[in-house]
Amino acid sequence: MGELRFSVEKAIGEAAVPPSVPLNPEWGQQFAHNNALQFHLAPGRTAYLFLHAKLLSDDSNEVSELLSKDATVGHLLNCEGQEWVINTEATSDGRFGLIVYTATGKPYLSGEGHFDSSGVWSASFVTLYIRVFGIRKGATSKAVLEAELDRRRKLRSAERATFKLNA
Image (cartoon, rainbow, N blue to C red):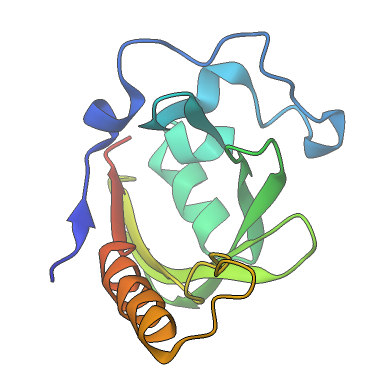
């Protein structure tokens, strides 16, 4: 099974992130509705990604400056309304690692990215854990458990994502 790939244009749809979506003031002024993407994942399930303003800057030096150091480059409001944070760490010239932490501080996604001198950057990431799906209470038969594990393996391979943004 291959990677799930999507472009920002396809993922954000036609609507901008509405002002009714709350911004945490602790994030700072560099995170705003005009630097955000909206992901429609399923009917009634929308996530909002707020990117650091420097990631979308026309000034390639601002992009380079941000991605050349340890930084918080994004905040995500997931489908359940939880706040997640995206941190990067410079790994070498033009390359960085990234980790997405859940609201409880658990790392959930990790990946890497790169940027060039023109300010264009891209990143890819994968989940660190198989999603937790409850097995029915009392369902202990070997066949049910094997079917659940097989379903999880299939989901795991489908949860890979590549994210590219040409700023």
